[in-house]
Picture 1 (tube, helix red, strand yellow):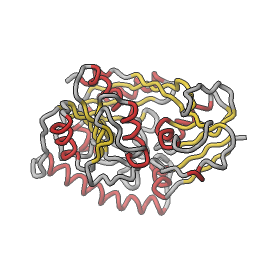
Picture 2: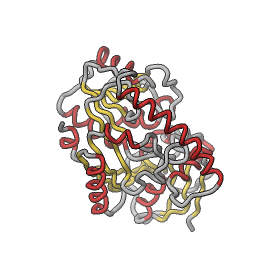
Picture 3: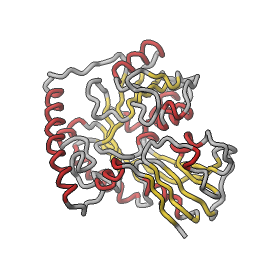
Picture 4: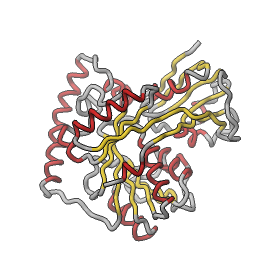
Length: 347
């Protein structure tokens, strides 16, 4: 028997509302009122940048931004990782700058998570995404800071970076970027197509003109549909569009590396923006006894898992935070991503 167990805060409950196109009622009406105010503020801010009233800062390195129009997990980390690996293989000095969501470190300060050789913080301190990038990428620096300009200048002057990758920075306009890559989920799209807080959109339609390359992230078996979505959106935004194909690869023990054979009974556990897609990846190969869902970037404590019997399968993003617990039956789902990196970077 499959059960569902969610430990979600109000913010996550509102995010679920964002992707329900049939939602209605008093609370949605109230949120839409605040969306009008939010939309006005973001529109004025964008106009001020467009007219040069608010200034952008150009740094002495190539800057590539990987971002999205919406809140919630779209799948930026694999794209950021693919870009970084490409540059490293070309012997380029590269640094990734993240805001550092979910970590105990204050992002008001500049934090060097990794200088490309040495790892300075654990997952709880750095945040799951920044730590995952740091442990999976050799010769690539990872920094967290709210002030991306400050972090970029440090990476250039102190670490010798010639390529800067901004993780989740489409709305951060204070730094000049040479390439704006924007991601869209092939199935979730723009949700109910409303602005925050009534919907998932971070900006209005004025943002579309800033997109250089669009990536439709496909996490379903229907590649043809994703390719059609990419073509339609590419025409709409008047930019080149690509598809990032995502497949479940294998499930491995996070302590030993041993694979988990198909058909085993498991508890599926995660704390990500779009958990339903993770669960779907597992359903065809494993008997899911229970689904345990936490808020995105949740900081795990021992009590979160101590009552779960048997094998646990989680995401790689969650695995870096669960590895600290003395338990030998936690497994992670390895995903395989295919994306035309060279095409994406071609200007």
